[in-house]
Length: 391
Image: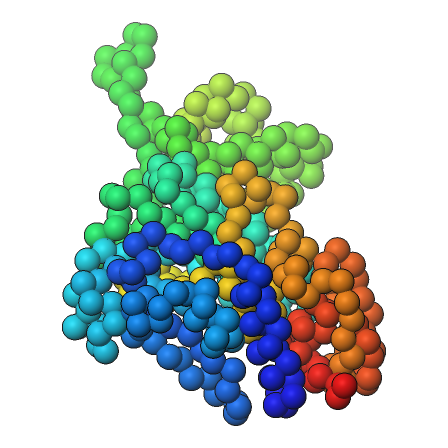
């Protein structure tokens, strides 16, 4: 990035902070603060181990320093400005989740557009929120678009604030489906049976919630699709699974037709072939419905995380808090465009053109000198795809 471009973005970031009223995280004075200034060279220099007392009024600090990135810690400390983690005196930490589109298994880098990557990431966010709200019952959630490639979720329920890294690891394993054992989701029920000399047992997949309900939903959806097919096609579909031959396929199909009520109740013992297929769907469900979070972020009680309301130096988009009821309608490529950058154009020299979807429009940007809406120009400059033209 040329100095002219860097100076321009520094100045416009300052203008953003002049007109933006920031809401601090709870217990802001007990947290460590850090930032990355606009500096020359390929590397980045993180300034950290600062307390809010050292920074002073945060809005005035941001106007004065106009940093490239701004962070605060998940942790709360006795002395947040101490120079080492051991000296800070850890007290508690938010439980933080980070979803990054670049790391999602359903994103194909180099093929998916930025908009497509972010849409895939929002799907992953909705799965994560289902785990946090439905499975764990968390209520104190703050949802944030990172300004870059994904989303952050801060959990601040009192019950988890003092969890250590090991306890947070267990939550990570659950939402990722790591180590999930199908038998652990099965309840065994004794059935006396009319006329039977000895009682028998049936195995019921838990369907009230958690992973059991997810697996059951996926399994029943598959069976419904199967029963809509002609018999030959249904048999062929079942034989696509490893280890299912003609006999097992026919037995599974018959069991699905004749035991609907039992299957809806979670009874996976109507036939051995059905039980084996249900176990396969446990693995498929984990692949489809786990929340692919950045695991080290959640287990790290000292993690620095991006400040909502600040600008992301790699995109010139805003880090935006999202109300829970607005998650579905939130469009990061519209709602995270800073108002500061709307309403006028800027001349830039584009080194890497192409389509840019931003602000509700799709721009076909050529290489070379061009005048663009400032939010598009700032986005391209921040991503290293354009340089500011001389006035």
